[in-house]
Length: 390
Image 1 (cartoon, rainbow, N blue to C red):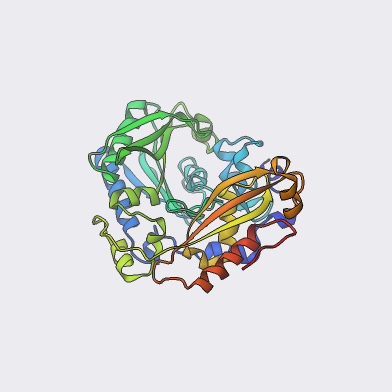
Image 2: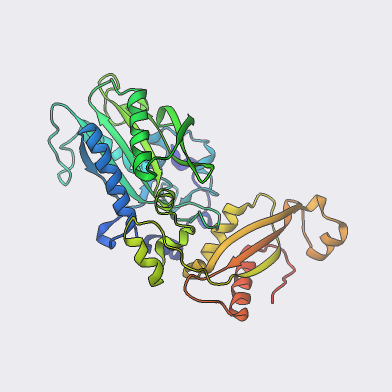
């Protein structure tokens, strides 16, 4: 059972404050929380797939708090899969977590095709021929780097075509891919490469060519028979397609947005552009403040885990941080003795040089403000006994 792989100690779980902050963030895919260009793009994608398939559409939204089993077990993840580790997953308890992908909504959605009247609130009558697109958008929760293209709470959508027919093919999957790419980046060159997912067969990664560089856009495949069987659907009579898309990257590519923080910005020149799919109009960035930190951390810390700690310490102020970059890393054993003595490092630690770029979207930081933020970040990530504050 999945709870055996969840963190074993209480202080590994999210605190009440951490959980409250995560749940208070606006979901940009939800029209009930205000209009946003992300919703327009998603609607265009769904409409394009409907046009190609003439399928019905089932919009599924659910709480981001999910059973660990829904996020992992029912999608085919093994009990010892590395993705379950604390460094990647935000556990609330041994059995509940903040979903790490919108695929966590899919098992319950699939259940309703084998038991359509099992829940009075979602009871439905299925037609003799089922060809339906499940659309499951929302926020997911990860530990990620701080830079212009990553956030800790990104938006995703899972698009699963479900059919009571065993004949869904690889060609059907490629049609789905070409339709998606044409909506997100019209006329773009694209390619697919093999990718393994526990919930698909024939899994693929979708890359698009943008400004001379291949960028990952989405991943997809045919629904794995075990996933269908787990929801009471006979794989000899049911089949379908599964595709997961990161909506931040898709929207940034479509509009040419240079900084992921712009998607949530309140600065009027930026916020107004987040209400439509018109090409991005340049907004002059304010001058940055750069601060370099020499910190002692666990030797397995990386930009993803450091980024998560920075966001957690700064809270709402994290939006002023444009990037957190590891410039160098020296393990304890490789440090000169003079450096070990000065830093008082120990086995299992490393001395890491970190560069901060601080740049609010709506104002310029004073030197004192930048130093104060630098110190907050320093105390959040430094694990050595010798403190170097300014």
